[in-house]
Image 1 (cartoon, rainbow, N blue to C red):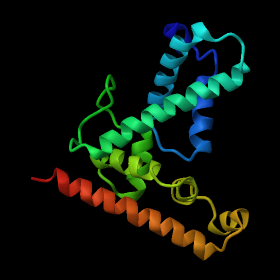
Image 2: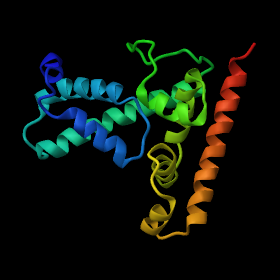
Image 3: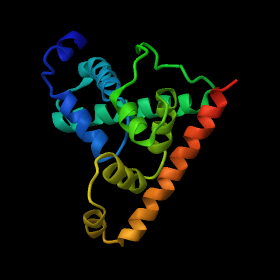
Image 4: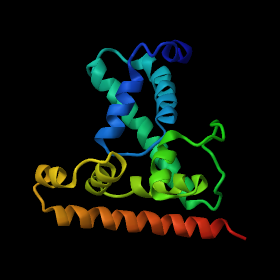
Length: 177
């Protein structure tokens, strides 16, 4: 079953994973979530009987996979190992860690912890930070869309940035002898 799901993405899972991660403003390795979702679908498909509607059931499987990966990332962030990888995953730097690490000048070994810290923040803070810092959206436009002043949006981003840099600093000093 997993092999069929992986060949050609017949259910459009990659798109669903991307949409669900973006809607929640989460920075997770989409490949990892995709693989976890395929596993969940393979296990749960035997008991699926047409209800709820398939699209909703699929989103539920993706959301459950996201929650599992978030839990594992929280555990990683609390561990002392900087090199620990998710079980069964190769030692590579996912694009999401690079997307956050590069603009902030964060070492690749630390960027995973920083992503976990960002994912632990409230949605509005994650969304604002991701929109302005990672996607480069316009501050004034974002303020107008959210109904708050540009200075308030800027302060929100600054708080998030300060928090993430503190996590990065703590993580990098923890790894030094």
